[in-house]
Image (cartoon, rainbow, N blue to C red; front, side):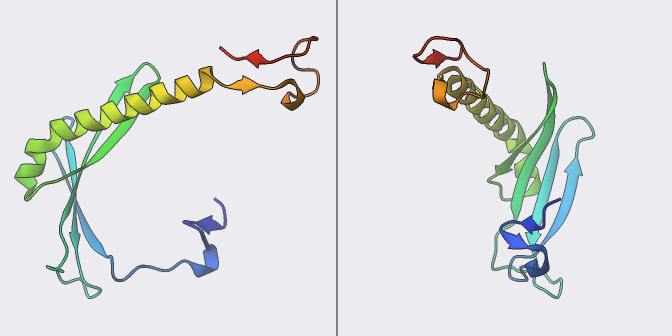
Length: 132
């Protein structure tokens, strides 16, 4: 691991006492997991001035193997979060798919200029080489 984490040197790392949360994990023991992050004060008591955060988590199986997927859920309760779970995961998978397609397009349109190729790489003639 590097000596930097979130832009800080290891000897500068400290906890943000104004942003503490208690984490509870709930599962249907099949595929749905909800993480509930409840804001707390530094003494561990609830902090009613901040909203509870819910996060949907699951693992999907792809041709490349298992892929963890998570997405925040706008919910007022645990039951509401589980009700909204399928929609949240579907939206997260769509975002992942769009990002993968974008990365493929970027890679496919990458232009390699001969002067930037490693020694011995590329053809003999001048011009541009388009990766496909």
